[in-house]
Length: 419
Image (cartoon, rainbow, N blue to C red):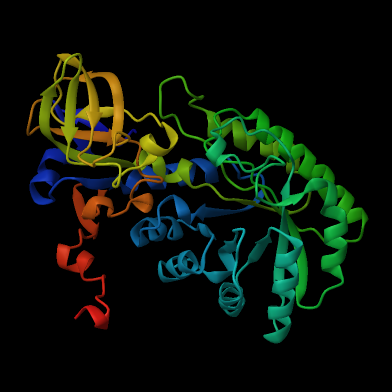
C-alpha cells in the first residue's frame, strides 16, 4: 500500500490526510487511491512488453465507474460476467472490442446484448452454452467470437470458495473433452473459434499452479492447431494474489509471473489476454471506520466499530486477514477483537489482534479492501451502504454516495390488499 503512509503521525492517502476526509465524509466509507491502481496496471504492462497482450480488468473486483474508467484510460479492456457489468464497462469508456464475456450462466438476453455490441470474445463454459450462442448469433446474423474455458484439473492451492480449476468445480470444459467440443463448435453456424481460455482460481499466492495449468493449455493449443483450428487468442485469466499478510507472497510476484508467461508463450504467435482484478485494485483501498465502543469483556477487549460485515464481508465469508490501522499513529499497542454492530457473531474483522491502541471516537482503517469490498456489500440490518471516495494527489471525489433511508426503504412496495 505504497500510497497510504503516515505523515506527522496521521495516515494519508496520497497527499490527503484521512482524518480530513472523515470530517467531510461520514464513516464508514471506502477510500481509494487512483495512483495505486495506475501503478498496479503499469506493473503488468511494463513486464509484458515482449508479448502481444490485452489486459482486461476483471470488473467483478470493483465495479465503480470511476475505477473502471481509470483503467480504461490506461488502455485496459474488461472481463465481465453479466450484462450489468458489460453495460458498466461500456459506460466507463471500455471499447466493446476489448471486452471479454465470461461467466457460467449467460442468458439468451445477455448473449444477444453482447453480440449486438460486437464484443471481443465470449468465454464459453459448456456445450449447452455453445449451442445457445450459435442459435442466437445465427438469428441476429452475427458471428460470435469464442474461446472455451478449459478446466485443467489443477489445484490452485487457494481458498476452496475461490478455487475454480479442479474437476469438482462448476467452471469450464474438462480438458479431456476439449478437442471434441472444439470440433463440434467448428461445425456450427454463427460461431468463430478464435481462442482458448483458462482461469483456475483467485488469490493464488504461489506461481506453481499457474505454471502447471499454462503448460497444459499450451499443449492443448498445439493439438487444436493440428486439428485445423485457427487459435489466435490464449486467455490466461486472472487470479494472481496480493499480500494481505506479511510473508504471504513475494513482492516480485507480478514480475515473476510475467517472466514465466513470456518464457512459455513468446513463440506461440498469438495474442495473450490477461484478466487481473484483485491484483489491480486491492491495495488501492481502505475502509475508514469510527470506534463506537471500547468494551471490556471478561477476558477480551472488544473494539466495536461502525463498519460491519454488510460493508465488508471478506473476513466473515473467507476468514480473510486484513491489517487494521489507527488513523492517528501511536506507539502503544493493545489486543482487540475488532467487531461490527450487526447482530451476528460472524460480524468480526479480527480476533485477538495486536494493533495500535485506540479509544472511542477514534478512526481506524481496514486495509487492502479495494477488491471485493464495496462490490460485495449489502444493506443487511437495514444499514446504509458505505460511500466510496477516490483520491488523486490532493484531490478527492465522492464516486458513490451513501443512499438515504428513504432510498432504501422506498424500494419496498406494499401490495394493494394491505392498503
